[in-house]
Image (cartoon, rainbow, N blue to C red; front, side, top):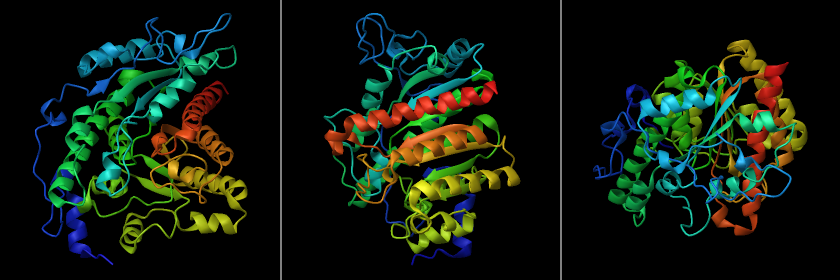
Length: 422
């Protein structure tokens, strides 16, 4: 078991920027590359807008007579021409499109990201196949607009994608088994974190989006949660509570990252997380060092592990009970209005291609949807993320990826509206 000791742990916890988490014991060789850095461009958002059809609709929209598709709605999405906008200009754009809306959900995509998983010795995305965002757009663009869903659909604003094309190019041929090359990959993961956190911060500031501002963050590897946590923390000025449906703790030592397996440790090292609940943790997929970190951080997980869920009736019976327990605990300790981020790792959902490629461990989508609705209804879920989906690993399930992402967004929006109108 890795043991860095109390002194080493305390030293790690005080470090703020991830690029400074360097210790003599780490095998990673770091030497900054030549890509453009967020820190050198503080007034710029590394954001790419959404592609459009020649008719000016959201890409993949298939217009049909006598009906309106969601992709035809005006102000649904940020156009492609807004690539790398200045923060001041984009803030004004957010103010305009969110004006007078009781609910405003910014949708941000990171589906092209596979840097965190690769730096964690996991599998990357096949470069020649559609991303999870493509599959999401195929479904969302062709939702039929009617009197019962129009308000929810009009509350959405598809901001586009975190632009990391230069980082992907830099890492395309790198081998994580070679320390120097892995160090370069980790630099790129850190740069991705900086870029995405700045975008999240911009779209969560109440001065930009009002009190109805929320975030739906799509895909990429789970290191993207670090950006969501930091962005919410900076924008709202309070450390969010995190609820994570995941087999993995992502609590590896920060000195090994950042990557997809360290985001939780990184968040606590920056002192940006108030408390964490992990639901579905697999005791077979986490080291003693990770468990040590969970205990140090005070994470609530032990009664909610995968084996406990199976011994208490499986997901159909156990997940609703766990959901209610978590809600009651948050209400008692922090209050129901305290900001919450709810994250789903695609590894935990049956039938979806994902980084870990679990075949027989996950929970059916129909048992996950009620968690989304209940947490959203009963708590202040300001951010909702789904990560680790990789349709290119099993193209026969591409449509399922799009359905899961698009329907969860609609459920999130519809629940928030119903809650606001009560």
